[in-house]
Length: 320
Image 1 (cartoon, rainbow, N blue to C red):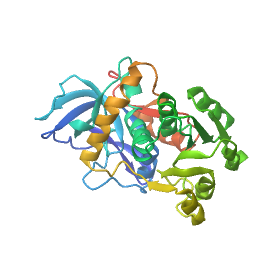
Image 2: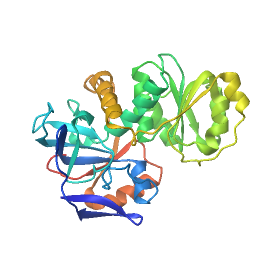
Image 3: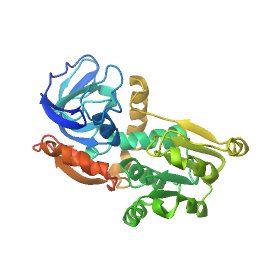
């Protein structure tokens, strides 16, 4: 089969061995794969896959099941999308059958490829780890990103008002159209987010240079969930704020979680979140698709930080 691999800062569509399909796994003929910031980091050599995971890029994909290992209830021909530790940007992928969800009714496979990683991340961090309750106020940094787009919709669907920080006025308008109450453009200074706070939960892919202001913006018993370090890995904090407000700082990653953890997460997602697509309360925010042969252009566009929503690589046009 062919697969996309990161090689010295660029990507190559190369021949690789097909994976075997064992007990409890399914093989998916891949239609499309979502592109995430983690793929940028892996291409640059900064984010290697966990031990035992595929070296092929891609943390989510959609497609059609072509082989079913023993012990799985999936059927050959089922239209699915999958959460992966790697391997999605390939003509086929083998994955734990418990990490697969059906394509929501009415969605194309290209749209479905934009769902697993961002909705898993938003659901895990806001609703499972931070235990977000209806009515609690949420701040989403990088609100127009793929994760941010999913998080805004989930906050709206489950009754928690949210605000965002973003990179431009256009992206702020995009977030408000999705359901955000408002927010700020970061070049204008994120300190003005204080006008909307204090916040019960902050979902933060930035870290470093936002850390001190996050503490000021949090309410008493607030939860700060750190999911990335786009703004650096070091910060100077006044720990008196942590103590006085009883703040919880939660560091969270998904890719390196074990199979059972992901299976439980996907099961919860399938029960609590997936039905909302059919009801029209959630939607994939597919900004643009690229053919797999144009993968370098897709990576370059994501790196601009100007994308609202998700980019998807189409691997099999006959399916997507």
